[in-house]
Length: 252
Image 1 (cartoon, rainbow, N blue to C red):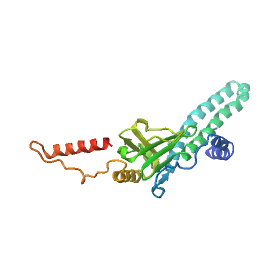
Image 2: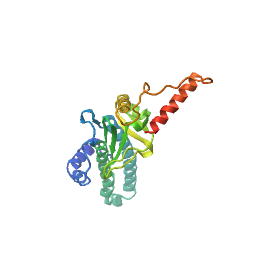
Image 3: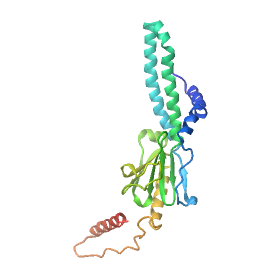
Image 4: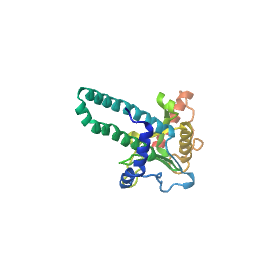
């Protein structure tokens, strides 16, 4: 018989507040969002993934639990029928193998959710995740090239999306003990419930950073226009302007 969710929840809550808190304190698992030095605190927005992301992670937990515990339980029943004495002797170890990993995995899911933070300031954004090893990614807005939204069928069911921030190069260096740069020149905000709003906010901050001394401080009105020339069509001029704008951004 597979342990009910209520029983696992009661056990995990006890461990979370008691035994597990010893490990979280020992490994200094951060519960507060990271602080961005030099940022305007009035413009800082910190948030975690949506609750749907927690349910999304639990969905995979329950699938694994049913498959693993179901197979183990069926094997134990078969053993009990074939050899009742051996099945009775192995009952406690088998049930321990079924229950204890479930509790640990259930707690780890909550810890992963509780320690994931996304921080947007006036100058940059930071992504923090991890339990035993904390990974922090800092991206300055002037490095951003593209902000897109990804959503699979299962994510759609849970009402969440991923916001992918692609950059022109590596991210800004971070402090001691933090992971530096941007892995694969991108940053991933997982489990966002209001993905369109977050994407719009990032793009708005990227646009404002162009006049804040962080990136391209010249807007299109301040740049010299491409003069019409013989043999160039309007489309050719548009392509040349895009090449010029990209070169200016990369030169910063």
